[in-house]
Length: 266
Figure 1 (tube, one colour):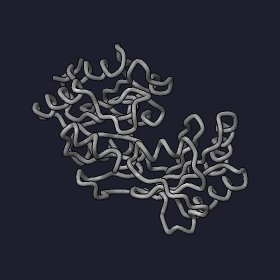
Figure 2 (cartoon, one colour):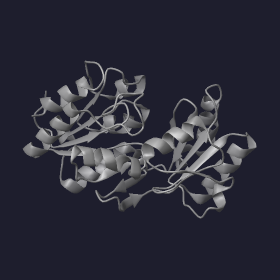
Figure 3 (spheres, one colour):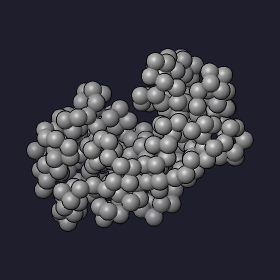
Figure 4 (cartoon, helix red, strand yellow):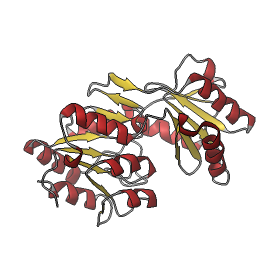
C-alpha cells in the first residue's frame, strides 16, 4: 500500500456506515480509532457526502474532524462550523423547467439548498434523505415560489421510468446540469457540483498533490472523486460504477475493509 497519502476523503453512507443502518447511526469504534491515528500522524481526513450539512456534522464531531466538509455531492462546501464556503445553485430557468417537468408527469420533486429541504409531496426517498441530512421535510407544492435558490433538485419517480427521466433531462440540458441516478430518484445539480471537483479544489487549497489523495466511497455519486484521486478504493459491497472507477476493491464485510485501508496508510 502507498505511504505517501496526505489527504483522505471519506464518503459516509455505505462507506463509514454500512448500508441499511439507522439515519442517526455513527461510525463504529474501529473507524474512530483509525481516523484518530491518521490525524495524529498528520494526515488530513475529511468527509465527502451526499448529505446536507446538518446530518454530516454529527459524523464529523464523532470522528473529531476539523476540516472543511463536502456536502450535497459537492454542491456545497462547508467550514467545520457549518458556515458555507461555496455553493453551486442550479440556473433558475432550468430549475423552473425541472419543476414544470415533474408536475406535468405527476412526479414528486424535492427542492433544497444547504439549509432547507422542500418537497411537493412526501415519499420514502425524500423522508430518508431528510432523515440522514438532519433536516425537516417542508411540504411546499410550489417550491419555485419559495425564494430558495436550489443547490439540488430531485425528481422522484419510480424504478420503471427513472432511467427515462434521466435520458430526457440529459437530452434537453446536456452539460448544463449534472445528473445522478438512484433507484427512484434523478438528482440534478449545477454542472460544477461533484465530489471530484470539490475534492480537487480543497486539495489545491491545502497544497496537496493529486497523487497524495486517497478517496474511499461506495456509490455512483463517489465516482468523480474515485476517478480523480491518486489513490481510491471502494468496499466489497460498492456498486458497479464505484468498482469500475476505484483503483482498489477492498476485502471484508461491513466497514472492515475501510478500516484496514485506513490503517495501511500509517
